[in-house]
Length: 194
Image (cartoon, rainbow, N blue to C red; front, top):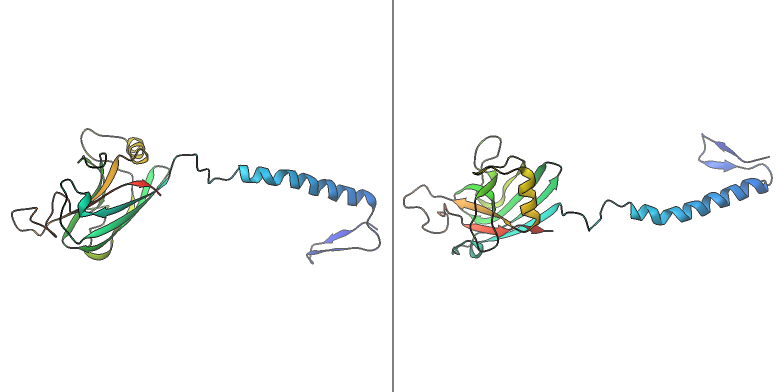
């Protein structure tokens, strides 16, 4: 009698020897599976030759242009999926944070704001100060003049021509007097592939 599958028990039940035809069928099936296993790896979605989707930045005052003397530091992680950037900016020793953005410019050069991360009002969160998460969220609305598309921003990120900037302001004139009062930007970090 040929083996039968008992759906209530996850095992084969055999009554007598297995016919040679069934054994040959299973061997051919296993051989085909062995030939297909290498193809499964070729279909892997983690193709490192595709465009990057995960990015990081290390923020410090020394990256500002001109450099800023501050004990504040930070890091940022970004993930691009479809038409959305998801992000988390984490900081230490930041006082009076008011806004954070992605700017477009090469390292050592100041550039225009192109994506807000916090502090600009709904739907973006307010920036926090101190040590911990400054901002986390998702955004796909580019800003600035002349206007650019989201795809143009993503291309600039992938080319290494964007940076994160955290701006601070103590609310007392004049601005840009030092730590906790750098409206021009207190800590900055170039965005790079992870």
